[in-house]
Each structure stands twice: as structure tokens, then as C-alpha cells.
Length: 103
Image (tube, rainbow, N blue to C red; front, side):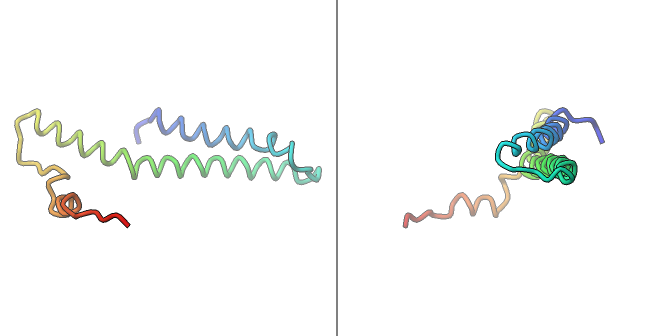
């Protein structure tokens, strides 16, 4: 897997949320002394999970579509017009032509 700046930013964002949250929660919650360390560790794990979910959603919603657009653009720039663009599918055309009603 290639290193990704965006992936590192998302993981760092989740990790920083996990680090900052226990201190911020301290303003509103009184901890039992034995449980503070466990709370801080769970916050770090939750922050990492948020980073992983953000990365997954980014790939699902944005990166795959950008890769497809780049693939079509590369084909067009090399004068290859045989590659079907995603917006030429029947389902896509039907979704555009579908009349919208106001309730």
C-alpha cells in the first residue's frame, strides 16, 4: 500500500481526538482514580477507530470515483474513446431523466 498523506492526516486526526478528549472530559466528569488510565486508553482506541472509519468512507465516497475519472481522462487524452464513462450507463441516464415531484 502506497503511503498516503490524506490517510495519515485522518489517522492523526482520530488519534489527536483520542488524546485530547480525556482532558476535555475532565471539565465535566469526575474520574475514579483507578479508571482514568482505562478511560484514556479507550479514548485512544476510539480515536483510531474514527480515523479508520474516516479513511474507509473517504475511499468509498471519493477516491474510487476520482480514480475512475482519472482512468477515463487518461483514455481520452490518448485518443481512446472506447472506454465507457460512468455517466453513460442506462441507470445513470434514467436517474437524470426521472422527474422530480415536490411534496
